[in-house]
Image 1: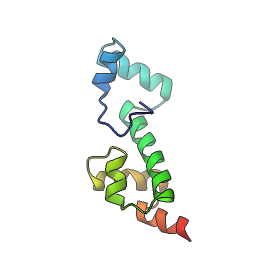
Image 2 (image 1 turned 90 degrees about the vertical axis):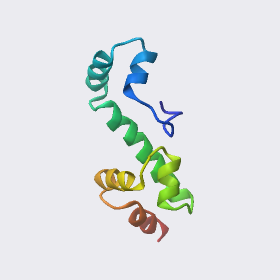
Image 3 (image 1 turned 60 degrees about the vertical axis):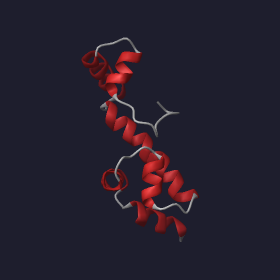
Length: 96
């Protein structure tokens, strides 16, 4: 998952890879990681986006797509929830 975060990854597929039922996988993942599978995947994607916002001049849309988000608006929403600023504001703050 850490090396394929930019690809569409479904919890059902991960459960199948582990030869577990979806419900058992989901409960076990939450118990071990203290968060839902999709929340964990999105946190990885946001962390990678942070790195790209710092190290590249790519647009927010390009960065969102490159880390696996289907829509820029969803990426911005999650980024704001985790970082308390928009991706563009984050980029500007670090450029100063």
